[in-house]
Image (tube, rainbow, N blue to C red; front, top):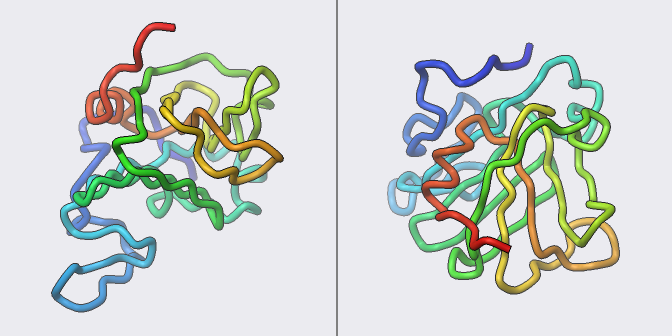
Length: 167
């Protein structure tokens, strides 16, 4: 069943509270199965259960996938078996986008307008993250200059990354 809009629960968290199913190994560097460490900040996706038939086959799972900002300066977005990773120094900022058409927002998508990528789990709102240098392509034939992610705490992710400069 999908999540509801952000309520009183914290939408991002430090990884000691990482969802059930995360595997922590050892005491030094304590890592989860997705490579995130204890002090990393995790922003899970907000999943709309009505579209499970689109994101479930790609391996995206509620509470397991989203955006991690690592304490060693990495930006990591996972969506099922797909991963986009870049140094935080390559992130030039982010802004909230909303009101997508469901058929352009759910799943893994390339933008028709540019080389942007979407990791989408709902069609209400998300965060467009901009990169200074294009990030190695995840799908398609071009590297990506931006990534839209439909995290639960959009404002929290924008605050953590900084506002994108005006175009």
